[in-house]
Length: 497
Image (cartoon, rainbow, N blue to C red; front, top):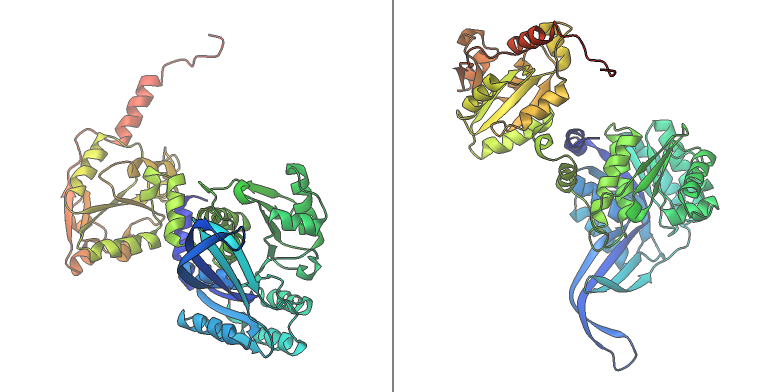
C-alpha cells in the first residue's frame, strides 16, 4: 500500500463509526526521578513530579479511535464506585457516547498505577475485580449492543480478562456482527480461544498465540504452524500475530499468509501496541481496505506506538510522516483528488494563489519543462492534472501512452516547479477543475481562450485563463518519429554477436 492510498484511507476516517466493547479501566501514571535508595529498605525512592490519569484497557482503543478522527461509542460494565464514575465522566468530557457503559453495584473499577522514573517503569500497582459480571449485566450489555450494532461499520472487542467479556457475551456479540454483516475484530486474552470462534479477526501477540495454540513458537516454521492452527480451528477470516520488534504475520482463511517487518526505528515500550493494531485493523476494514491493506497500515501504526513511552495513540499525521519516509520525494506530491482538495483549501486559507494545468505529458521533454516553469511563476502553487492511461488511449489511440500513468506522475512530481500531481480518468479535466477551483487555469499557446475547458467556471468566481507558448519543434510525436527513423533500418544485435 503506497503513501497515496494511505493518505486517501486516512481522509475517510472521520466518516467511520466504531463500537468498542470490552474491559474499561483507568491508567494512572506517576512520573518522577530517582537519585537515592530508601533508608527503610533496599529500594529506590521516586520523587513524583507529575501525575496523569488516562482511559486504559479498552479505553486505549477508544483513545486511538478519537486520535484518528472516528466517531466512537462504547459498551462495558464498570463498578458503581468513585473510579467508575470518574471513568464515565472522562468519556463524556471527550464527547464519547457512553450510554452503553453500565454501573454495577459492588464491583470494583479497574485502576492500574504505573510509577516511572528516567523513562523506565519502576513499579505497577493493580486495583481491580476480575470476577465475571452478573447475568443481569450480561443481558443488559448484549441487549444494548444488539439494539445499536446496525449503526456501526465495525465492532472492536478489547478483552483484558477482567470479567466483562464472558463466553456468553462474546458468543452473542460475534453472532450479532455476523447477522448485521459487520466485522468483529478482537484483541484476545487467555489460554482458551474457543470463546472467540467465528470472529472476523483476532490480534494475539506471539506469547498469547503460543499459549492458545499449544505450539512452542521458536522459529518461523512453528510460528506459522501456530497461526495457521488458530485461524483454521476458530473459523476466522484472518488472524494477525504481532511479533513486537519483528513486525507481524497475517494468516488468511484461504491458507495464505503475509509477513510484515516492523517499521519501528527504536522500540521503547510495547504496551498498548496491541490496542493500536486492533484499532487500525478495525477502522481499515470499516473504511473498505482489504485485510492485506489493513495489515500494512496497522504495522506502520504499531511501529510508531512502540517508539513512545506508555500506552500511546497514533495520529493520521504521524502515519503519513512514516509513510512519507518510506515513499519519499516525488511520491509526497502525488495526491488523490479528495486529499488534494483539503490540502488546497488550507493553502488557499493562507492566501496562496493556485495555478492549474493538465495534459498527458507522455515522454517529458524540454518544451514541457519550460512550459511548466512558466506556469508556476504565475502563482504560488502549481497543480498538475495528469491524464490517466485509459484517458490517453481514448484520446490518442491504443498505442499510447508510451509511459504509464504512475511513472509519468513520479517524473512530473520530481520537478521543482510542480507542487501537486493528481491523475484523472475523465476525457476532460472539468470535474477536477470544479472540485479544486484554481485561481489561474493554464494551457498551451496552441489553444484559444474560448477552447480551454473550465474557462467559464474559473472566470465565474474571479479566476483567469493564461496561455503559454510551447518551445517550437519540441513534441512527443517528434521524439517518437526521430527514434523510429534512427533505428528503423538497424538490424537487431543478437547475443552471439
